[in-house]
Image (cartoon, rainbow, N blue to C red):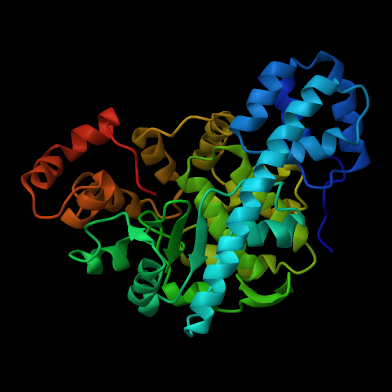
Length: 389
């Protein structure tokens, strides 16, 4: 039996009252001791700041459900949280309806689909789709089927947002991991891989050991617990460890599968992909900030370089801002193999033309695309773009 710390760990140094309460209440079904700690802090909370903080990190729904279990919460502010929860619930009901429609459509055409995060995962992990905001419909499909998926979605009124996909298809398939298609109301992102750019894994890896779950009258195929933790940990890394809701999802997945996770297998996979440091950082964040049931030996940071980075990352967790490319480049130091870092940085500064077209949403074969290629290093430093992924 792995030893689990019995008490929630909330980092104290440099953390404001509202942030501390946010960590305590951004948990799914927190222990009574956690609610007691939050209750003791409630009288000193600046509610306007707290509401904004929770909304910015996408955890208002969880906070609302936990505030209902507490005393002396001003009704005015509880109503604000309630409104956000109900708004998320309404949006997600519409999104869930469209997700199910597309799921049925694709499976009828013989295409296997694994839902990623989104409303289906929220239903499985939280049992309430109002607790986790979902912006897009993210699905994993076989790499060989991506062109057919694109055609099926196009027939349903979804338009490809990346004009360079057809011309640079080989680049997209080998170097990126999804395309994005939008209708008048929704955006669908079919993925064929769940690592990209900074780490690589074969597309077929994600399908192995997948689990079948009967949910809401449908049978879904889900990532195995170990692969789901790898995927959500990568996503958290890719987004610069902010907003908090990405970490919350990983912590909730760990809690949901706590008796099923094969930790040795998980770390075996991470080691294969030079991902162990990133995984350890994510697991330690989940344990330190959200009291996820991670065995102590898997939530420890190894090496001075990673310890320094972890201290920097803990300061980033509560930042609701987009991460600057220079900061993202710094996170590359989390890779297990330092030799791979220079190769990735060089490719980031001088990428294939397909990536330039994708990154800046340009029309292929134009003078503008050539100009952007020439000025790409400067644009990255100045952050004059918004990364498509």
